[in-house]
Length: 219
Length: 417
Image (cartoon, rainbow over the protein chains, first blue to last red):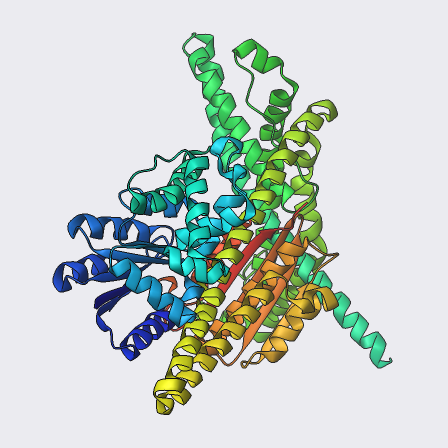
């Protein structure tokens, strides 16, 4: 797996590179700002880009903009965005095109190496990784008419894990229930959110994205 | 005479000298506005004359606005040094309404009086110390003059020998004494017409005062928000990033322990470095919010402590009646701390001086050093940070640092409400 890292904080950039190399992954380039990042994408054609949200010059959403642009230039490029804090507008902007091969994680998750690597591989293989913190914020801040408040506690747990990108079996393991029970919960979630019962795989992501969109549209 | 009495007398003398220097500074400022007032008065006479043939009427509104502008300039100048005066609003529309307006009439009266008193007291205030210097130094250079020349200042008689020259030198001491005695009074005399005529009538004053307070309060809140943003930024970009790096490195170390124990120690050391950096930055952020020493010992004590800890010998001259708003004191402390760090790091100075004064509602800080100068804001020293913090408080920063030195940084901060 070839990776390009865009992160302006030197310690973190080197730490990440060190970590990934130790795992036997190929770090093609490490850069510290959006311009060189896009050049590196063009030159190295990586499989995955790991991008910090805040980068020079204004330290606001340069990383998101650069990630979206990189995906426009190289369709199918997997992007894992790292952020110091949860900003739903940024997440929504990032997931607006497609949720395939996109991840949005809090920076400190990188320290939980196993989970981080799992998220990285999932995104590289076309999956989605959304930070649990993003999901829980969404769940506490949704509008009364969104359908989300009708979910039971267990169904919320399942939705959170779904959003993290876990499959049914993994969810069942985490919650210590049977696969059948998880399947039932998921059907209930889709029904309560009013999602049509076709195309299972995409609906999982849609369930989360719908709320990202809604929070973005809120005044 | 006991030691205590002597110290007291000395401090009284220094105080008198300081008052005289302040008086001179104020008189020079007043002289400046008086010259402007003279030019304006000439223009007003021309406009009035032109009114007799009609065309002047077109010029009246702009002339009255010029009067208001100059009066406001004087209000601001006098406010910096005594009771605060609020600027009146716009000049009323229409010539008739404007000429009936009390404030406009008083402003016009002030222009006339200020031309008279401002210029005369200004010249007198400038002459006294000039004479003192001229006469006191006369014995040093009288021999350069052709024999039989007149003396300087008011000595309009020929100087022929050493006795004459020394007598004039003694007169210099007299001029100096006279300066010290008269300068503060002259400054007050010069400001008197302004102090009488420029304050607004009580009823007008109140509503404008409310508007003024609203504006300054909004500015204060704005400065507060800026300050919060600054803190948030330094926590996010500094401390938080370091801590994230710590967790990443710890994660890497944990993996290394099982796979390749040899490298684990190295990774752990990096993690420790990052954690220490995070702590150092956190300390800096906390200190920049409100240095604990400020609460314990006030601004004067805190700055004295800073000067004592400075690597370059540093004199402190602080004269502060009362305290300022906490955020202003914190900013003042930050500014001096940064400035002294710069002095110690870059200037190569052998001496530095920190002067702090309060002038009405302004806090004035001055840090000077005798180093090599050439301080450049572009080259990433702490100066940019200082400027940003001062600007957040609507303050002003002036830096003079020619190549070869000396460097002087002056900062003016509003003391807050």
